[in-house]
Image (cartoon, rainbow, N blue to C red):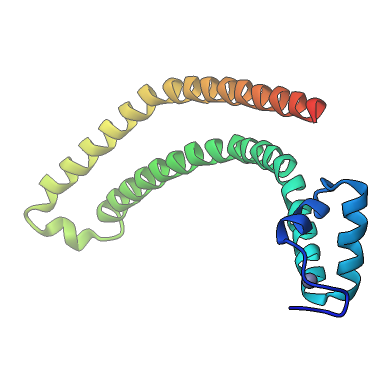
Length: 168
Ligand SMILES: [Zn+2]
């Protein structure tokens, strides 16, 4: 590691140089060494890059929290929608299955157990319909509470990140 310019500097000095923590005289000495020593210069440049990354890390963190909250707003609604769509699909399948058994597949009606099966299916449809009526207001309330909570969270995160940006 020895160079014509002299022996290598302490790596700690190089880190401090990158963080601008060296007294001016010592800084000049270390910089002079860097001009002659590629390995120390490489260390210095890596340290510079690293501290640049560290500097942007905190701001980036606040930004990503904001983005997460923004993403969570539609995500929750989508989740409820998917649940809703799944329920609707199940109902549709049940109803169309019942209809197809009733109308387009008369041969099946001849089979002895089909009458009982049809009774079971229509009973199921009644239950599903009652469930649908009971659940709809509850879903609307859930939508409303979820939206208010989302707004509250977004407001808190926004004010915290703004205060952080002001302090920095
Ligand atoms: Zn060196």
